[in-house]
View 1: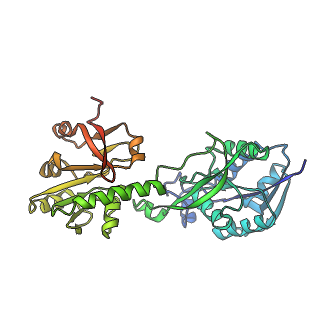
View 2: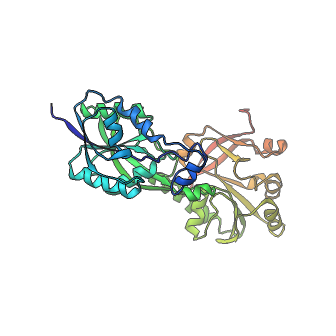
Length: 370
């Protein structure tokens, strides 16, 4: 039986920032170590490799902690084609992948997180499949197995020609912005992966291209009726942000902004500031989008729009927007403003704008499905 050549690499620092609360390790390795972080990627890789004993594989790999040492320890057949220094970088990952391609590997098995996946994809693109052993802090991409042992099982199935090859999203977030409570998620592209249902994780609940088009249609519709001279209080989130994007306004992603006549009137406002502005306005509306998976439209992440603001605007002047995908995961919407009477007023069936001139009815509940 002909041995199959598999590229193999480990990002030795992947996941170190997680337990010490750094939300990632990008540019913060020394800080993670200072806080007591320990490497986890090697052991995660071992768990995956443990499922591959006695198979006809030749691993094409890197020296030391990027692959060679663990393969030697586990008595695998391997060949080192790229040598690293004591400290490894993203450039090492990219250079190693270039060597893998030169050696005609059939697939690249890697242990790391979204950043590692992104670096590999930047070199490999769709030339060959890749498969991730999950070890990072951020796990947005859908190129990872659900756990290390599943990665081993998927590779076994791949070697036996029992997997389908399909496209999978390569996602990543800006860690520095994330630490500042800014969610900046990017789709870098679509890699090829060996796919087995259940064993491969799905992409996190972020914006896909199709959902982006849905958001844009919602935003176009909103902009049409926002030309009425009224004040609009825009809540947090990417769906609402799309409105300001089309208006050419810089929106506070995780905050509340105020728009009138297509122009930004106030940015990142608190309750007091909103009330002060409302005192001067005759007509105002609130545009909010439910939190994905949770379904809250008030009381989570937008406390600036509190009971006093809602009563000032009027319950009848609340506009809820959400993509069809988000609504498909939310049988109910919830409110928790801190004002029980207001919560009861907000409860009941409400229209949710879900596309251009389209809406769905959803039941809004105040803590219980009544």
